[in-house]
Length: 170
Image 1 (tube, rainbow, N blue to C red):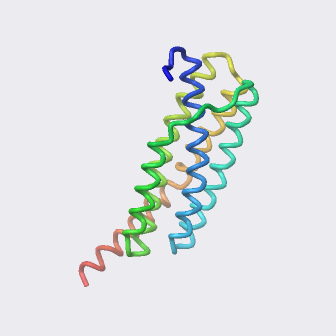
Image 2: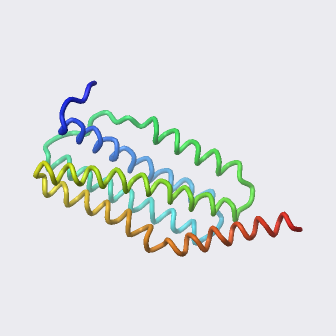
Image 3: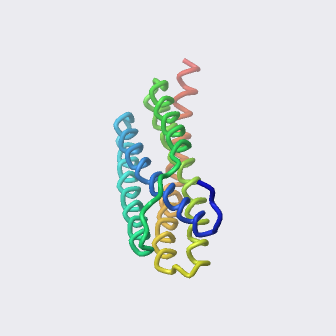
């Protein structure tokens, strides 16, 4: 269906983000089962919880606007989720699985930050302040989650890479 107005573009994007949040919640939960590292396992499970909360906020946005989500285009999300799952299955080292899971978490958060920044601006520009506030909350959660864990993620990646290098040297 062609998109002709900013409102149509907004609802299309909001529907896609809603579908992404639901898919990502399931993906992080599934990945947490593939990682042996307890800290990374917990981090992924907590992220799944926050994704479900974000989806709930988006449901509230649709209620406020008196609309239902449109059929989302989830091909990109599905392809990325499949790629992450397949790569996790290929990685044999538990330390490298943890590294890859953390890297995937970071990449997906960067994508989500971009989506929320645009949708928040569109909602504010159109005067939907309650919707903008809910989306801003989701954006802040995405940014906060990464910022608060940035150094720890970096440390875990370095530890995993050191484990890999030690394995090659042996």
